[in-house]
Amino acid sequence: MVFSFILAIIVVSGVALFALLAVYGERKIAAFIQNRLGPIEVGPYGLLQTLADILKLLQKQLVINASANKPLFVIAPIVIFLAIFLGLAAIPLGPRFIGVNLNIGLVYIIGIVSIEVIGILMTGWGSNNKYSLIGAVRSVSQIISYEIPAGLALLSAVIMYSSLDLFEICELQGIAKNTTLWAWGFWEVQEVGGFFSWGIFRYPHLLLPMIVYFIASLAECNRAPFDLPEAESELVAGYLTEYSGFRFALIMLAEYANMLLVSFLFVILFWGGYQSPFPNLGATLENGTTWVLVKNLQLATLTNGPFWGVFWLLLKASIVVLIQMWVRWSYPRLRADQLMILCWKYLTPLALFSVFISATWKVLEIYFGS
Image (cartoon, rainbow, N blue to C red; front, side, top):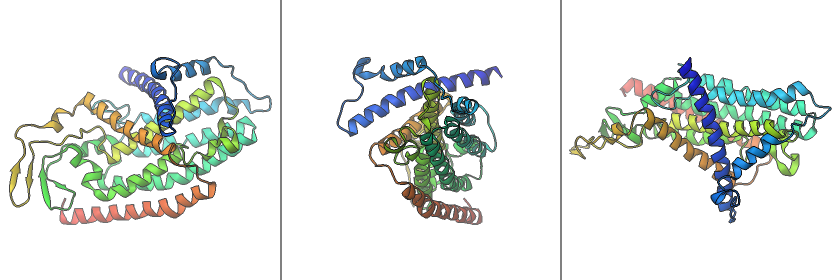
């Protein structure tokens, strides 16, 4: 219990620190793309600007409209944050750093994070503001719709791993014996591990569900080009319109924590999780003739461990978050009809097709041998 409590404190502190760095990074990325400077005044290179904004929010008065539904208005930000925070509990940060090791960890995360929809709807209804209500309804319809292609894309990967345990999925993408390079059998790679054992390289067809999940995760996080719930030109600030001070900061913290959570799932299922990207340089490649690259030098083994695992997972997740930010400041916002057309006419059929490919692949693998 003591270890779990300490780990929870570390995760909360880590999420808060991540949000501070992510906001600063996003401002700088946006400035770079738009050919301007971004934060430069507070601290060296503007590093303390986000901290100053947080201090300002914490000192602001908490205003509640007289016509608002006070219980819903007050509880909604807590529900949104708790839904995301509880989802982080089942993420294996490393070989020995995991809050709750569940054999159905992926199902748990999908289920608990879906509670966020209730919190968002509470913000719109409790605010008693037309802009807030429209933004909340948009967000709920968007998140529920895009959960279908996202879930199917995750199912495509789960079929190949034959497990819902995120820790086991990470371990399956570690150093593997008799792994086929590109999975076609042209080259047989023994004890290679590294990125050769990641899901996306072991099963190349997972590239399709990986792309589908990334696009759907942007919509689930209300990130541009799917930020219709917070469309400033139409809805002021969407479901956030009536919020200020600490409650506003809590919802924004949940939004960035959700970005981190979907990035963790992306990395665990497609990019090897906390496993090292370095292959075993002592491996042998067989293609009629055997070549020994380097004897007794196993980078994949040397760079795998409890703390190395945390480092690799955070590094990979940070890369995914940076791509999310890059997409936000590169593409214009979609219309509501375009949003739904993309989901139901394109992403969902592609996700179903990827499930069919994964199922066929798994049957053939079982029949002919791995």
